[in-house]
Structures are given as C-alpha cells and as structure tokens.
Image: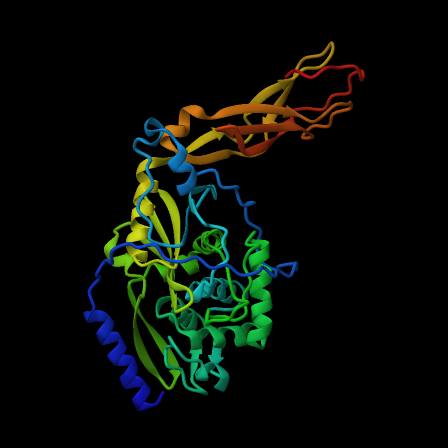
Length: 411
C-alpha cells in the first residue's frame, strides 16, 4: 500500500476513535419503491427454516386497537421509513413498518457477500487484489493492486470497516468475477426466502436494480448470525487485519455504534448512501433470546434499533406450543384403539405478552382412508391468533393400522 493511502487509513481510524455517538431526533422520511426481478435458481447453501408470516404489531394495526389492548405494547418511536423486528430463532415478525417495501440496502448488502465468502471459501486462502477491486471508491480499506491478504481478513474488512474494495476482491476470489458472484448472491437470497431482493454488486453501491426489503435483510442476517464465523466478526468493536504482501497490520473500528451504546448488541452491519439513507441491521441477545432489528432510511438508526430491540425484549415472549414427538390428539378408528397423532417437530411462536392468553390451538385432519403407515401424516396441529393461523406442525401416526377400511375421524 502506498504511503499516502496508508496515512489516509490511519487518519480515518483516528477520527473514528475520537468521534462520540450523538443521537439524532427522529423524523419521518419519504418512502420509495422499485420493481422486483428475481431469478429462480438453485442454491448450493444450507437450507433454513421456512420464513414465517408476519403476525406481530404494525403501526397501522396498533392504532386501531383499543387503549386497553395497547396498554404496555405501544410501539416504540421509529424514524425509519421501513423497519422490522424479528425473533432470530422462530423467524416470527414482531414489528412491521413497510417491511416488504423495496429499498436500496446500501452496505447491508455486505452481509450476503460475507456469508458466501465464509461458506464457499477457505478462511486461509490467499487473495491477490485485482486492479478492478482496488479501483472501487467510496468506503474502502484502501487496497492496492497486487496486495495479498487471506480471505478471512478481507471478509473482516468488509463487515467491520465496510470495505467496498474488499467485497469485490472476495467475489472475484470465490467466483472468478464479481458478476458471477452476484448471481450466486441472488441464488442464495432466493434459497433463504428473500424473494424481494435483487443484487447488482457485492457492496451496495447505488444501482436502480439493486434492492431489498427490511424483512428480507432480517432473513439474511438471521441466517448469517447462525454461522459462528460470521457472528464472531460482527460482534467485534475493534480489531486488526494482517496483510501478507506487503507485510503490515491495519487497525479497524466497527461502523456499528450500537455495539458501544447497547450492552446486548452483537451485530451486524450499517449501510449509508444518498439514496438509501442511513440503514442498520442490528442483532442483540438478552437472557438467551436473540432479536434482529432492521431500519432503512432512518434519521436515528441506532436509536430506532435500540428502542425496537428493548421493546421486543420487554413486551414479547417466545411460547413453546408443542414438543417434538408429543401426542397432540387421537385419531379415532372404528372398532380399534384410537391412534395417537404425534407432533413431527417442536413448535415455538414469538408474540406480544398480552397476546399469550389469546392463542388458539386447532386440529385439521387430512387423512381419510386406510391403511395408515407408521409416521404417515394424519393432519396438522395449528396455532391461531386473532383469527389468523400463525403456524402449524404436521401430525404423524404413532403406529401402523391395517384395520378394516370403515372408520371415522375425531374432530
């Protein structure tokens, strides 16, 4: 790295160290939207639980509730144009403010870049910086052509210091070109259920066809925080990365100020462009429960995220509805011992505490003829809240049944 760029990097780190966090008064900003173009392709990545439908509190529905219903569950002040609060384990949405509106994601894009870099590459493989990667502007870690560093160090530089140049170098190393890597990013997004997301580059620099939503970014971050190598990077306030050629160390300070302001914060990524405004995907864990907050185009992104997370920890809870293998109901047979219907897997739901007494459980039988094989699906065990089905789990036959075909179902 040239002496001039090295001095610039040192000055940037020094200034970031001096700056203090100054909350900004919340204000409403204008929303924008873009058309969705998603290519349905197969992903190499691991599968994740199916995304849940939103059944949490939204600003629109919250206003229509009675004062008694709103007592203790009134939404926190949110300056962002779009926001979502999601339970990291269940995937349930607890706050929804324009969560499915298309918006430019800025550098929160780098969450996906880092995920693929960690999953598809080796942490210790050596990356040689190309002229294209070194030429990327805006937020960078000041890479020069020909410099060498391990893939893990570049991923750290992308997540902690938001290096646009590092993202291009990662993409080129993994896929041979940034363009091919971006196709892989879109495939991965689709596999995670982020169907309202389309990437055009690895770093989030402005492009009219580069967009996501608050909900999709929460899904992607939820997956990323499940990777130990990813979460261990995003929770670091400060760190350093080692370049191999030339041999030197670079100090980095995380752009996510929530790590200093909020004791439960443990990730994940900031983003800022003129079009996107100030964005933040934030994670926090308290008493063993992890929540993810996303705010897009916010005048007070760190304040928004902290208020949403605190509201989530204080006003919502995760309820265990049924355990895997639990006998939920009996499927009655004619002239035979009733057949136990077992839950295929455990089912937890995250809801506001005031909604806990309102949970309804229903059985929906789908089996109507013999024979019945052991483990065959008999129906579903459904969880309803406020007149809407919020989740379900298949019910499986405990044993095989070879009895005569006349039988009836118990509702």
